[in-house]
Length: 306
Ligand code: 13P
Image 1 (spheres, rainbow, N blue to C red):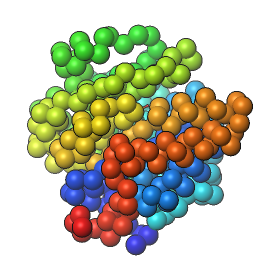
Image 2 (tube, rainbow, N blue to C red):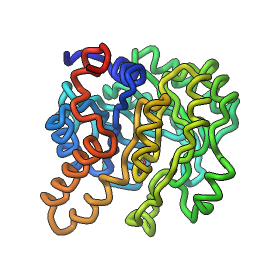
Image 3 (tube, rainbow, N blue to C red):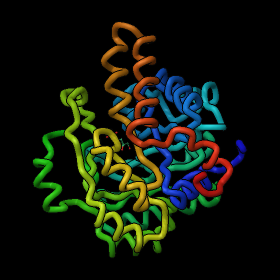
Image 4 (cartoon, rainbow, N blue to C red):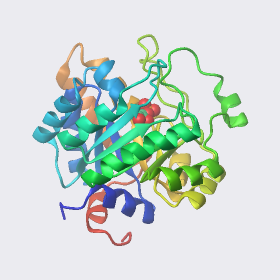
């Protein structure tokens, strides 16, 4: 039961109308309560760190997260994933993405993401293909991104309703089909209405607006791509939209803000209360938002939903 790979997990979720939640760890003490919540609810989930979390938060480094994972991870319910390593970051700076991803692969991460979404289509394909080759040599899957899931950049977002109505930044289905074919990406993060929680010092405590998802647009991408799709910006999306999205190709859902904000609120006064808040919120997401409690057995063993 404990030996299924991350590739199998996400593929089984995709085929069975389930989703694998993926939780960001911007502070190392958040990891243990997330793992415990997944174990207590028997739910399969990924533990992950993004580059901005070891640069702008307190995750430390790729290796520090791996070491904490070695201490508290639980193979029945968790796998270790490298989230966003951008080619051009949220401050518009060029990143040595291949170096970071190479380090994570050597450190034992079981899947990796390269984010070339700020590049042209051709450049994004080229960078993703480079990472796909690195990952293939290590036998692990690669997630890539096409389209603009905004929110990590400093400065105000355009009004959400305008963004949604105009479909600005949404992943183009024709491009997505070509991207998957030519880049070798195993999973594709797409933009269909979600946004990332803000991370600038002045905005990171702010409540996220409730986003919606364009399910018709998602369905169109899903039919053309033939790979599991990933939803970023998983905090604060209308519950029905999330569940509908899982029925239309979303197999992995990234969650950061929902567990980071309660941690940051309590940590200065009581680290124990901060960890409890992370535990409670992870359980709530699994049970109430995603309704996937108990997914681990099915995801580890394959087979259809009982
Ligand atoms: P939220 O902060 O909206 O949960 O988004 C997380 C995410 O997509 C990380 O990659």
